[in-house]
Length: 197
Image 1 (cartoon, rainbow, N blue to C red):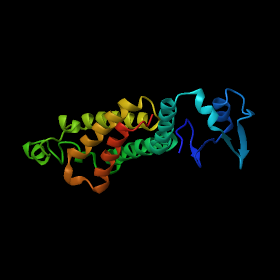
Image 2: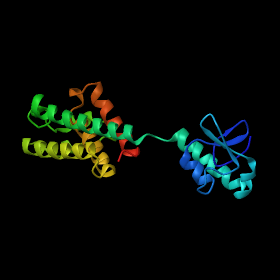
Image 3: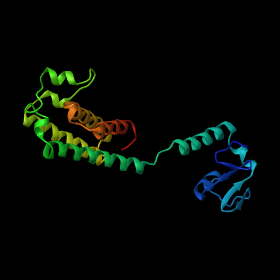
Image 4: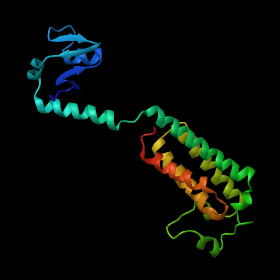
């Protein structure tokens, strides 16, 4: 099996598209070293002398790695949009439909008992204030971060901010959550490290 800048078939390098063929043959896809077989362009081993073997091996590995480990950015954009809109919907439901008092000191006071419910390394921005005004302002900023993430504006920054606010709202009152409330921060954490922008 030869090592070249393109995949090989039966030990012979093959170029799968016309653009790559033109690139390999210095802009001349009708080079006498080529023959068309079943729509694929084959070229003889005489072209191996044009470039060094290590460079071809490196190109071959890069092409293989980009195909094997590459990610379709359209699917990541859909993931980013879906997660951002889910977070915005979650915040809206928590503040408007459920009960805002679950996030304030009215039903869930920030006494030492509430702080002791949190795991040792947990944090909650929503624990910094107990008034309705503080919760509404925090929720509006939380929704703004989620919408910026959904629409792809400064995705890296807003994915981290949205994740921190979502972890904070989940940690505010752990007994008022369900399983989905713990999955959403995990999905946001993935969004922090994936090239979603």
